[in-house]
Image (cartoon, rainbow, N blue to C red; front, side):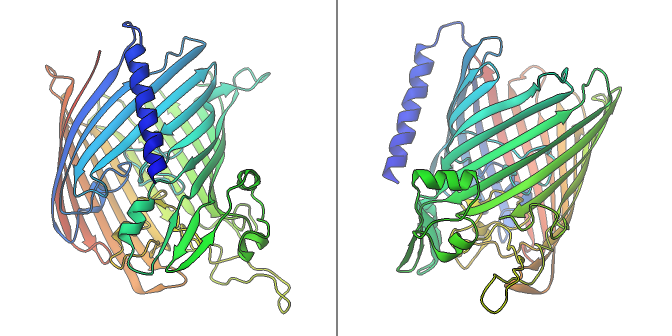
Length: 485
């Protein structure tokens, strides 16, 4: 991992150099934040840990100091740059010092090239009120990557703006090798030097000034590939040649240098989601319904086995003068996973049946996680919760209902509330003996004085009750100072 630190240091020096050489007329934004948490019970309550870009801790007493400096892009220019450096030092987190964000974005007209670590959220979800997307949720630390694409919607020629598209292609590297080594118990499975790939295409139909209806849809896919999988003294070396980068871009089987399963199926750990959203706006009111269908490999990508799993939600946006300004309701199920029976074609059984997808887990890799936190929905409890030191998802067959609400009590006091009820059946391979039921509640208040608009004081109360989480109570205090120069 030494070379990763060198790359991070070089990127930090580049960002500092860009800031030092910038013209005096350029604008920089800064953020300084202190976060302190106290809890009793088994661990920190669920919603005080989840969907916080990996900056959280299960330990009952924890604290974090975060300092960030950012330069936004200048949209009016043909070529512009945006960059940022976001550092954290913490007590009782998974790392004492973290480069949370260090990125450089280069814009040319509608195109963007982004290099480094940058916080990103799930597609077509409210990041503050949703339980989190099934593909991405903002639950784990950012993955350093090179991402090229069109970040904002642009009109397709000859459609007069009624059809717009955006998308990207990215390659990156997971950075949790050392954390995995420290977390697993002797003989447990871990990985190192694993590579990352993602791609997406989204489209929007409708023009706000002519119709109250706006439709958005899209497909995103990701993969883990390359690196080594280590269990005890056994090492599986996954190649990462130029051809393998193409094999994950166009999902296809590996060659003879890969394990047999990678040759008969596809090389690497592939997963993806279909997204769909329809919004209706009238005056200051908006109602938006959305759906995400998650799949792994190719067995559930299309309708061959039916789309029984997914996340369905509806979001209400109310006028800002009202005490309740946004409401999100969601239902999620992952119980089917293309069925309970799996069979690969062989000499005895000629028919292949693809099932037991075992969401977020994989035979070679340590699953869809980064630094112990699930990259997808946090409701499929992340490996960091495992007391046996295994990096796997032990409860990925579940159903959940979720409510999120936010608004303002006064001009200076805002609030956010999350409530989730989740039931788990374990996994197909290790089913729970009985249905496991948990409820997670969070109430957050933020005070931003009118005379000190650059300061924000926050307090979040979290409560857990359930079979997986146990009984937990906790509170999170935060003080944030933002500004520009």
